Length: 102
Image 1 (cartoon, one colour):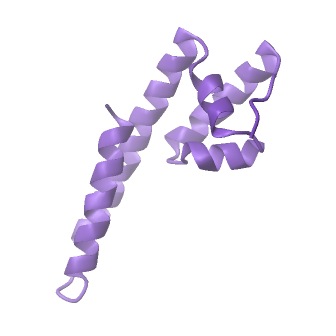
Image 2 (image 1 turned 90 degrees about the vertical axis):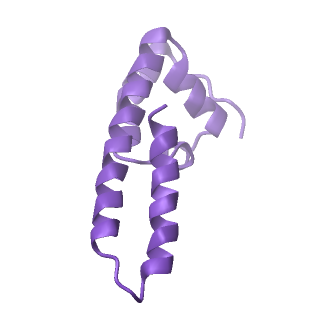
């Protein structure tokens, strides 16, 4: 997809919405699909100013807290029959959480 050109006001409006989506655990690709925009456009909008980049970093940090909850819930629900699959799930959640909160 080509990079979309938006006004500063529209980027500011979308930025707040996108940070909320990130904080809820959505991926950049999911956000791009929502806005019918390219991944590059979403990343540019999220990091176009130091203030936006800081807000995006805080949203990613908040998302890592959600993954912490998912990890705890998955660990608490492990049974002998699901242990191997649950280990893979928990490891994947830990990997994502670590990348969300650098």
